[in-house]
Length: 346
Image (cartoon, rainbow, N blue to C red; front, top):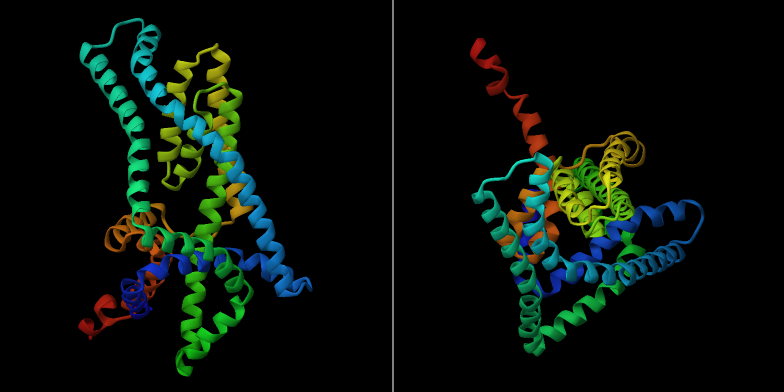
């Protein structure tokens, strides 16, 4: 398995331009294959099942993009003013609550941080435009990228349609004496990977919706952005919730309408955490343990640094494989005389 990973990265270093569309298509086929398989078990032809899932996923993605892109664009336009007002208005609110003045150093640093965040957000748009313009200036690379991305849905459809056959072809290439063992190991990899994808993405999406709706009803500025950050930030335990609460308090101070807002914000996060612990994880996601969030973050940072965007795409699958490999290594190490000490005691 480790040798196969090395071979994959060696091929990617040679055929990097082709790798991204193929990996994106394979990822889509892997994610949607359980749905098509379920339809196939109900008697629907795999081609029709693939078409049904593909069309449904396309419509859902198109609807989400058409709704979310304008919302996020409008929210992003408010970010500079959000940080600027936060740097000037949060401290007076805190002083009013405490009934005493904060040190001048705190006021100065808060104002500086707010201005720096505002300047950073304002400069992000022009910087992205310049990067896009320079990228588009290289016509050949720009056209190749557009063609590659346009091919992804086509490749994903055929990979999804032929997924069992492709897996069968790979299985047939394995040495006969190792088929059972390698099959069990990759079944473990699939269990770890699917648990992570199903678990973290499902929890993040549901929590993002809960937080966004709750904060919007509370009249908090940047409610949707804060909700998404808090929801998907939940991949790192307590970090997403902590950042979401902090940003919500800043938004609360900037749009204060009464104590009911504070109750609504607190209720939103309490309900979100209770649903995550009592309903979402045990009943929707299940009790299977996938990948530790910290391990995923380290893998993304490491492989992104080594292999760029392709490394980011492969970080989670590679982390799942390495988890299984390390688990097997530890199991075999605990059966050795070095660990048990049987040889030295005789």
